[in-house]
Amino acid sequence: MTSYREFHAKSIADPEGFWGEQARLIDWQTPFTKVLDYSKPPFAKWFVGGRTNLCHNAIDRHLSTRGDQAALIYVSTEVDQEKTYTFRQLHREVNRFAGILMGLGVGRGDRVLIYMPMVPEAVFAMLACTRIGAIHSVVFGGFASHSLATRIDDAQPKVIVSADAGSRAGRVVPYKGLLDEAIALAKFPPRNVVMINRGLAELKLVAGRDLDYAKLREQHMNDEVPCEWLESNEPSYVLYTSGTTGKPKGVQRDTGGYAVALTASMKHIFCGNAGETYFSTSDIGWVVGHSYIVYGPLLAGMATVLYEGTPIRPDGGVWWSIVEKYKVTSMFSAPTAIRVLKKQDPAFLSRYDLSSLRLLFLAGEPLDEPTARWIADGIKKPIIDNFWQTETGWPILAICRGVEALPSKFGSPGLPVYGYDVRLFNEMTGTEVGDNEKGVVGINGPLPPGCMSTVWGDDERFVQTYWKSIPNRIVYSTFDWGIRDSDGYFLILGRTDDVINVAGHRLGTREIEESLSSHANVAEVAVVGVADQLKGQVAMAFAVLKDPSKIATPELKRAHEGEMMKVVDEQLGAVARPARVHFVTVLPKTRSGKLLRRSIQAICEGRDPGDLTTIEDPSALEQVRAAVKSG
Ligand code: AMP
Image 1 (cartoon, rainbow, N blue to C red):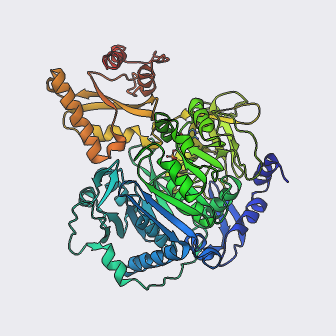
Image 2: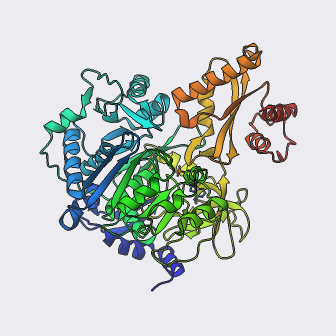
Image 3: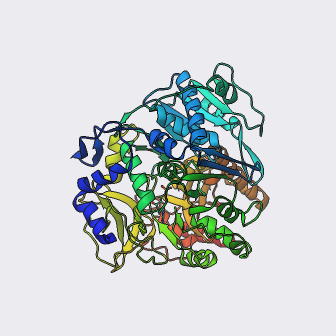
């Protein structure tokens, strides 16, 4: 048996040999001629010339061996429904959906935007796209019309797939109104909208544009749609994520590299075997949902649980009851969810038979030690913290127990995962820092298979944003601070840029600022991420008003704050709503006009605001302090 360190070393020293071997884990219709083409760094092309299909590997290739085994297990505690689709049934539904899309003129390379709650049809739609070589772009159901419109304009989908409504904690969340608004705002509206009618909210179809899924499905009941064999580097999907600017970036993923990387990760990291059950509590709108609700488990021949609901409805034992009922072997969740469970009766942790469960994976935000210990002691299973990003599509740091069960250290996501040459750099000089010193987490190119191939439609932005931010180097920046201990274990200390992480949801403070600025009475606004016990971070806003008389009394102030929050709710969605909007008459800035966000953040968190020699007006910080103090 190779040790993990040898395994990792081989992946870096001989990427072609290493990944050539891993590529055998999937089916290729045409073998590749070259494992890696890195002739135009930082653009890495994996498995050049190979032809494959994600949907074939996720479904079709399992039909002969496990066609009648569970593939998709839908559990909704929102609408009290449970339904299991075998691989064969999933195959049928995906063929029907593929037939629908093709009937609407969607083909290879066309985009399909999926704005959906956690229902099986969302998964059918994703797999139908990859089946026919169309590029899906799933937009998180919690986003509102403005967020949706910017994504429509960037991806320019031919078709949008959506539903009448989602449901959150028993409350119906209508989608159609937001979708109609977004399409009205968009410069590049779709030709057609396929609507899934769940019967939860009123649904008015726009004649000539909107189509009823149930009717279309009837028409395509017996369609058999062959898989479109794509060259490994053709895109499979685009997933938007937040960055430093207000404009979200479309993370573009390839086909062959992604299929290989995910299948390998199921073996080496997630220890999942065909015929077993995987349960990720994420949402299909996020990268974890793409990689580890939909593609990863199915690629591995596992059943995957699609859960619609919260962790505590009907009670705090609901997830563990799912583990017991469906004999879940690997589970994936986020630290925030565990912190929510921590507030529930601890008896829930021992009420169900968890003997099938081997490992609990947690990612998306820093996992604090008390939370990790609480859940590890409570369920008596190893907890595997893993660090990665929308951009990479699968873990950068983890303990790869499928290779060697090295010990975990609480507070650390572990060691660099095979394929990733992870380094720490001094942010000013670009030199590497030593053990136990803080630096920016960077990755030497080429990025391994499965990572983003570029920013959708903007190669230059990919290079400038990710590969040129560390001085004197061309390395990929994760935009996270980290420290490595003398055993090689990393600790992640938070972002270096203006991205914040609220309950595992990634948000750009600039997007929130832009939204708040659209309120008629806002002259200027700053948004920072502030540490929060439950959510990890929350957004905190400080606004300068054009007409301060509008907040002359405490009642008016509260009303104004509510109004501003509503703007964010309506434009971006409630996930982006700031916890508070504080009012000030001036914002802390440098003499050159740069907002001193770090100082504002430090004050909010009760820390020292740092070097203030360049501040233009010191009274601005006093105002921030007073605002925070007054609550
Ligand atoms: P996203 O692209 O939404 O997955 O967000 C990626 C960001 O989440 C990373 O850049 C980190 O800041 C943070 N993150 C993800 N996983 C972890 C983890 N295990 N520990 C600490 N931070 C994490």
